[in-house]
Image (cartoon, rainbow, N blue to C red; front, side, top):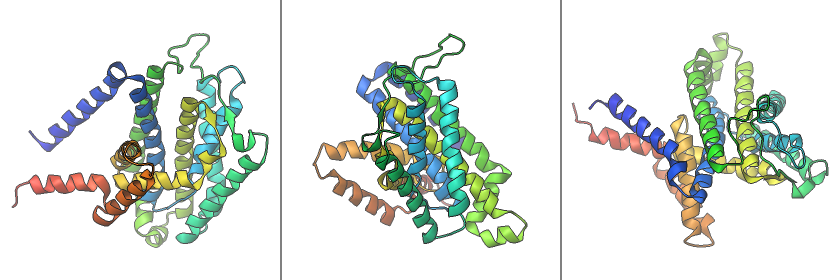
Length: 320
């Protein structure tokens, strides 16, 4: 069987497993799988910056938190917000914030860019933490999940954990496909070229600042999508959703899975959340084990877990 056929079989088997999971697994595992899908969207959005555009951001969680707070503020106290209006608004708010922040942060580069994105995220964190309009340090509660009603007809209910899982799966798959199309387009080729040699791309006539700004806004909007889904799943939002630790966690997912690939962040999200649960069952100091594992991956697997799979595949191939 050819490599293409094997890949197709693997994709179809994975799709069948994901579709069957809510029908076979218990409630806890369905909710855990939903959380993984949400974090996979967040990791893919960050990898668009880090792996493809070469922009390492430590403030990406700010857009995740903005998407979550947008849902909380749009939701009536004891009723659900309309999914079809609140979701685009939340993504739009996060993308608009990324556009504004990026227009300033992208005037820097290297470690200065990292610190500026972190500074903006901390500013937003303290705006929500120290003011009362969004619940202050306690955050806000979402008592009813968004309602997917269309002129009185409700095709599915997000209150049902299976429906919520399938909706999240569809959005995660849509994010993956949309990014794949984007990165194969001329825009994606320019972004990759900027990462390799921005000066050369600028000498060829490309407005590199505009390309990076659009890329930053797209990544921010996708992070807002992940935050919206997380808020809907857990039913509460708080300023910690904008904290630097979440940005660092997303960055670790990207590194763990493999930067510069679309499957890498997904694999990283699965591996990191699964390891977190496994290590928590071993010791209360599970962060030490997680940190040690990430260090080992960074030292011995610079291309992440995806690189390990590629290396194993090359060893199986017959020599010339």
